[in-house]
Image 1 (cartoon, rainbow, N blue to C red):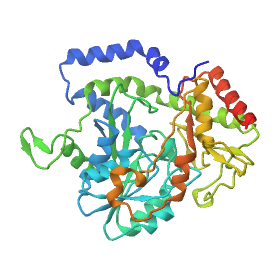
Image 2: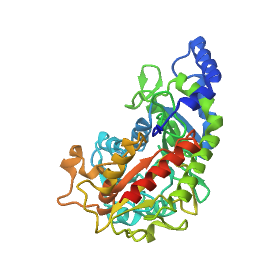
Image 3: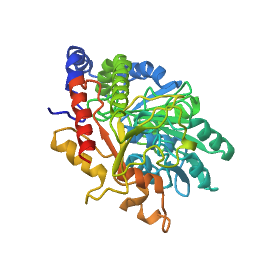
Image 4: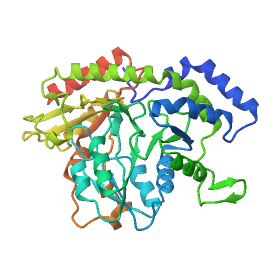
Length: 404
């Protein structure tokens, strides 16, 4: 049985007539830059962000870049961000001329370690960028308290977390800005590149809208140096068709996650953190002490609402592991040989990337995120994953553990 990591065809097929109608509406409108489609989508999605202003942009990457520009972050500034994240988080900081300052991660929720972040603040620090990785929010109360103490801005990278909540607060609504991606693999995926920027601040919203269109208040009259960060009306229209189904897509992912956790936890050598775990208590690998290899399941904190953009395992080696390949790579090969999709998010932390070698501190070590890069493997959790497909994934992992 083939089980892809992601299959969007059933989701698209179910909405095909509505998607065709939206495409035709845009085609016949003759309005292909901004306009009513974009404005309508921004109005409709704003409540999902928990923010007053929702600004459609060209990609999740451009949402981050636009937020940094709107906050006037540039050369000589520092922005704190996790090292265990997708490249866009750090790449956008560097593109402004600012320096990304990398921090370690929590091994339970995969998000940034707030204590480590606090230790890296300097007089040059202008912002902190928590990433709500894999669909679960970071410890935002502590992030916000840290930012207030030092008078710095907060940009929430919620690319993977639209609809996630932390103590009742929506992802992207607590900081100065929230940034979102509609890359096709996200819970709300576009048909290409698209993103969103959200804020509760009227002045920041106005600044972001200005910069989104080359910094021009009127055509050919440029008040600021901005960029072309506009979302296409076609993408806005197609996303508008899918938006009413976002809650359903997320609920299916949550059901798949709950089933994985319940069934995988029955396999010898597989264990999970308690639901009430918190970052401050999750500094090591005490949850699993295998003789040869073990699997630690992802955890949803009791105060969070996880949207499960990814279901990410940690595969760890015990003292008796004697294979040439790491246990993570061995499991990946085992799954791939049985045509089960899986992916490593992320195989090399940002502080070890070649492009950041010039800013790397001598002998810099971020031990947890380096460990996560060696141990993490994500398995299929998309909304249309069938129970038969999921049973096959579970059974194959059980077979792998039994053989080890």
